[in-house]
Amino acid sequence: MPGSEAWTAIGTVAMAVTTFAVVMLGLWNRKDDERRHRDGLRPICVLTPYDGVDPRPYRSDLLGVETDPSRPGFGIVVIRCALRNVGPGPALNVRIAFRLYSLGGYETEGCELGPLHAGEFRGSVDEPLRVAIFLRDPLRDQEFGQIPGGSWEIILTYDDVFEQSFYSMHPKHSFQMNRLYRESGAEKFTAPSQSWVTLGKGKPPAQSGAGLLVGFTGAKETAWQSCTRILQRTWDFFSKP
Image (tube, rainbow, N blue to C red; front, side, top):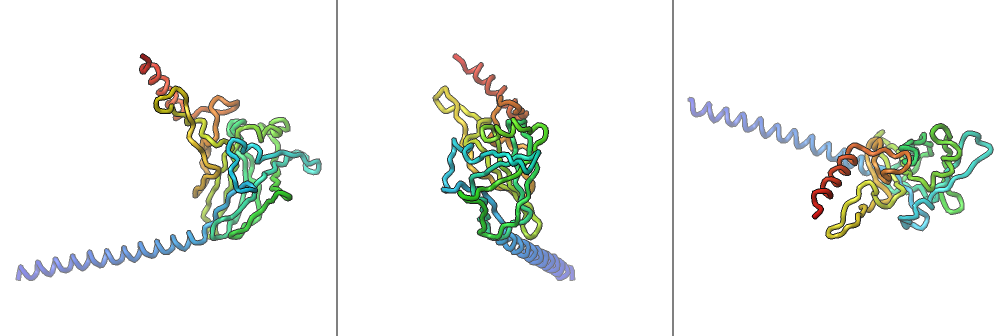
C-alpha cells in the first residue's frame, strides 16, 4: 500500500539519521577523550624570577652577559630565573633562544636543554641558567654586551610525548609600546600591559611584535603599525578645533 510504503521509507530515513548521529557522537566522544588524555600530559615550561615576582620595568635585570675564554666565538647569557615545567607531562626537545629587536628581530640559534619532568626545575640563585650564544653577524662582541639593555624576547620551545610542539615567550617590556592608545579625555598616550609569559601551541610567531619599540634602532615598522599610525594622524588632524 502506498501509505505503508511511505511510512517504511520515513522509518528507514529516521533510522539512518539516528545511526549517523550515534556514530558521530561516538567519534566526538573518542576525540574528546583523546584530547583530554593529551592535555593530561601537556608540558608547560616557563621562566620564573627567583622570588616569583615580575620585576616589570626592571626585567632587564633578569639577564646578564659573560665571556668564556674556553669558548671562543661564543658568549654566555645568564638568565636569573628558574626554568620550570609547571605542566602535568614531561617536556622533550626543550630549546631556548633570544629574539633581539634591537638588532631588527634577529633570533639566536636555539640552545638545547635536557628534558624536564613534570614539576622539575633548573636554575637557582647560586647556579643560574647559563646559555651559550654563537656570535656572528649581526651579533658581535659589542652588540652582545648590550643585550640586557636592548629590546629582547626569550623564546622557549618544547614538545610533549605525542610530538606536539609548544612555546612560551617572555618579553622584556612590561608594556606593549607598539600599541599605544589615547586615554579617554586626556592628551597623553598609554600602552597596554604585557604579561611576563605568553603560551602557545605550534611554532612561535615569526615576529610577534611583543616588546617592539617602533623607532628603536634596527626595528622595522609592520604594515599594520603603519596603517594605525596614518589613521591616528588623520584622526588627530580632522579632530582639531
